Image (tube, rainbow, N blue to C red):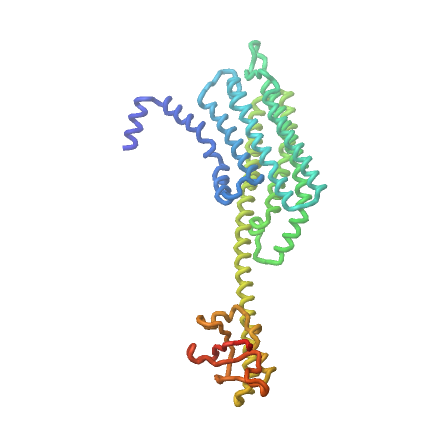
Length: 420
């Protein structure tokens, strides 16, 4: 059924219309088809209440600008222009819109991503001198990328022809590539300096955390990678440093090719080194998103752990209070054992029944709901003392056994009445 519908549509409108629809789809969908879109969605879910933090805005800006660059590059498919005796992308419109301006947005996205290590370093170190160095090297790094944007507009208008009317080779595209890859070399050198400044600032924190994790034998490198943000940042920077020698060799070989006008060999080497550069960039920026997701995940786990510890401490504190209260009651009970055979208590013995001893909230549930009573162990007998000079109670407290208030238990309610 689906095949029949496709065949009918294809037969009616032809392959050109179908290809045009596909190209329109490519222009519309770069924001969703971007490799960073799933990461940005996950970060939004984890930070939906505080997504306006600078570090989150940096990630959003990186994804947004690079997606706009992809959109502009895909507009080339709508024009579908080719020409004989010209280099890709064949027309000046494609060169400036789908290539030059697209690279402006791609590099703007990279600049946004370059600020992520600076913000993360600022969050873990208070050394103002180191932060000043990182800030300066980051600005220099960004300036080299601005120069990379400018390389697409240095020769205006650019001549994309392979040969001119006289059969001479046109070197505009080769000159551009020398400018472009020189800017890439400057980017990598400044990136190296920037990375070293960040590593220098983070090494103390990293070594301290590695020392902590060294005590746990089960912590593999993957566990440390998931737990330590500084390790992730430094690892991504080491990858960039490894890429630097290959890039320098390529720029040197490119200059030699320009002198010899070996355009075919240049095209092959340019394609391979560009693929390697994109792999390095993709790794570094993907680690940036993963780092933020893992940081949020670890923070949530710590909050849950703190809540459990707080509940445990409260329970322990309540248990200690209850134990202390019961100890006081047992002490009173022991003191009253000596008076089992006597209907009278001395003043000092009665004072031991002071209600302040039994003020713990853990015993509140044992008091009578219908009277202001306090529970203490008794001898199940009435106690009273009389003054020989007065026909009133001599004690400060009159202790009356209220056996009818509740059922007989190990504790009974004692009504405490002040003498007048």
